[in-house]
Length: 141
Image (cartoon, rainbow, N blue to C red; front, side):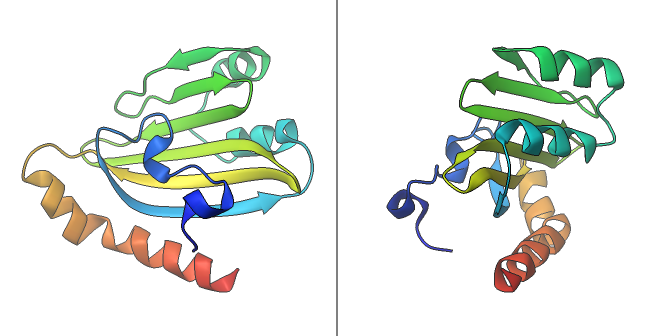
């Protein structure tokens, strides 16, 4: 993928909930239709978001809720909507939806948030598969 700064895209580490770990994989895709539609689809694809949280997030304007282990987090502002799911010890999945001239830009980021030396272990053992899948998706598009 080209340098994000050259084509107006945010750097992966500039999204909420990505600054306290290592970015392991990033995929981006442009989906036709409105940001609202892409956002609703992103929420539907995350089975860990409860119906109550989904209703709150879809009706909210500005909202920030930090993720916890197996508890979704959210960051919603007028031009950026982010949902986050964090696993138990290393994995944090960040999905961001924002406007794009051709519809909506959906960015998926895998962040390694393991503490200490566990971060290196997760990087070499656990995150390898996420990096491989991200590369395959990038090559297919």
